[in-house]
Length: 297
Ligand code: GDP
Image 1 (tube, protein in one colour):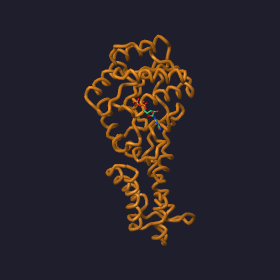
Image 2 (cartoon, rainbow, N blue to C red; image 1 turned 180 degrees about the horizontal axis):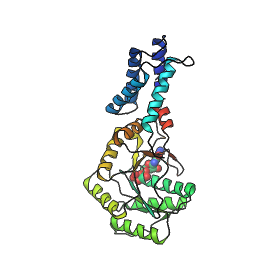
Image 3 (spheres, rainbow, N blue to C red; image 1 turned 90 degrees about the vertical axis):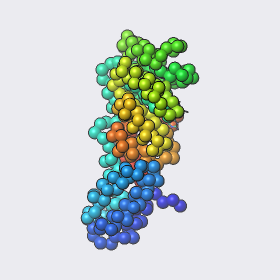
Image 4 (cartoon, helix red, strand yellow; image 1 turned 180 degrees about the vertical axis):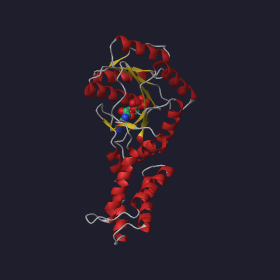
């Protein structure tokens, strides 16, 4: 059976260490395990390397407390270091939507879960924060995507901007802003078009929309199961558009959560929410503890 990282670490340490402090050699052996496990969890190599260095510094020479085994102690050091790496200064669930109507731009590749997440987040803002939300689809290439947002809106009781055929994304964005202002909405969320991969036309279009509405939040929605690809997508969107946070979807899948660690370490951007299913309630605020637990197994 495949042992999880906690078991592997405990095993290595409990075999090795009988003395009172964690020796350098002991720590090195364990760290090899940590590195392999992180790579298996789809953490990128440079991030895994840096992380291992941090743990090495924290663990070497640390006195082993009587109440735990050395293995348990190292597991705790690794766990705490994971949580520290994943934790930012901000409160992930708190969006900057104080001055109404606050524009929220949703960006990402096609199929990442952008439209579903837009509706989930709108529902959350409505129910948890009592906000009046307007959603608008800017996906002029796929009428089905526009209809999808309208259907979800009706389902969750959140208004969507009426669809007008033949308008450009920036014009729809302007219309959304106008309707949000006149209609007294607190927030308007713009669900931009995605592509299968990043291309210049897509980026230019999103940039134009950004310049028109000046979003308070720009959230990148990416499939958490795509690991390193998710991180590359985030870097690219951040470089071109500037993102304020990330939503990792499909975290209900069997991925090990390594993308979250790389995401934070590489882009420096906070993960705000995680998608945990297709249902409208399946969105949670990002919790470093949970992801750390998942990476450790
Ligand atoms: P978009 O092209 O980025 O707008 O993607 P959609 O919102 O249309 O989502 C694509 C598919 O992924 C749909 O079938 C969604 O129900 C599904 N989906 C979105 N988020 C999640 C999630 O967190 N977990 C799971 N299991 N499915 C999701």
